[in-house]
Image (tube, rainbow, N blue to C red; front, side, top):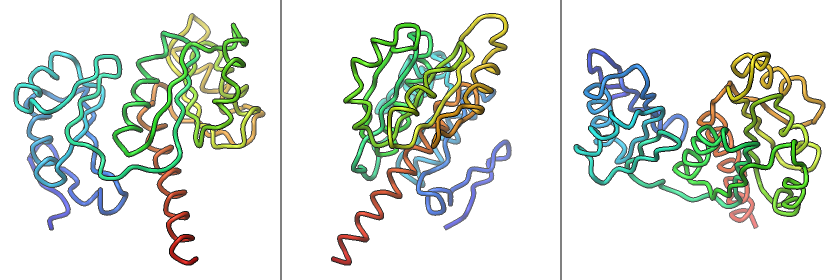
Length: 231
């Protein structure tokens, strides 16, 4: 099989699923509807599925006219075609500090689900009303991997990192006022957190957090499968 398809404006990576476990994902911003359609066509022919992130509603309508079996999620701005090939044991919990963080949280949740993860959501539990978070403490501690999305001062991932013995993936968002600096303040807060075992992705990068969470569950499931085969 060819390793990539040269479309002139794009060299589509056909070998990525074999190398990494997942096909190339299309980043929708900055591409025309026609470019996205041609890349999708190539990916679907090769893998039977495709994902487009950061896709406007107008461009999504063009894609849905061509691929009526695709699904567009308004909040996350993700277009999906085709189901995951496998489902992992364990679960990913996506936690959002505030309702304004939902576009990024939903990007993470939809991506993780498409990559084969069971996803639970817990939204609007920021530290300004800590009782809301603590009311779900038992559910939080049972999750396999936690993606924690927060803007403003970005404190929520540190709080959750001190509650659990599982991987915490922190996602700073561009939600906040003035000195929040379009997400730089929560990014730095998360990077300098005293909570151990926490990793941080880029500002508004729900996709990247979900990808990391899926790889963690994939590795864990491979370990369980190997132990079962040896026993």
